[in-house]
Length: 155
Image (cartoon, rainbow, N blue to C red; front, side, top):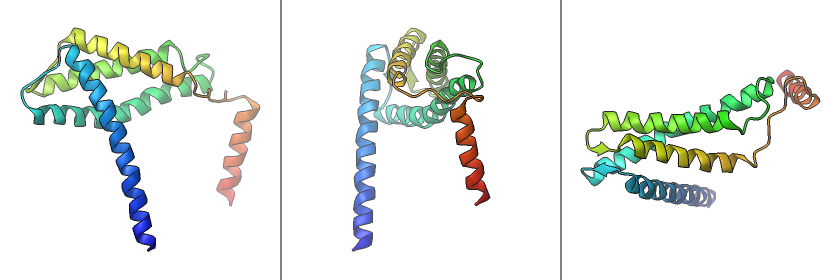
């Protein structure tokens, strides 16, 4: 009985994630199609979006981590500004051009890639607006987190 409930939970969670990913992919497909995406077969289109998602996730993590790290050491004042937008936009543009270069059955002009990158960068900027800023390294909040981590390592 326990394994059946666990399997149901996993299947439901995976279904929800897949539905969300398919929605995002469909939105991106519509936008890219309007901006000039051309493909020779449905299989090449699927492989394009699978590769795009697989490569975009780690790049997105890096693009989000860099401004937060720079904010926490006091180099920049906000992790939500132009640096974050520029990284998101630049990495998306580079990824689309990389996939366009190496996939023979997919074509998108560079203007479409620029517009798509700008749009996704703006969406990302709006989504990050509600994120909390990381603590600065000399702040009391950072020292409190550091002491909690040190105490947890000792135990």
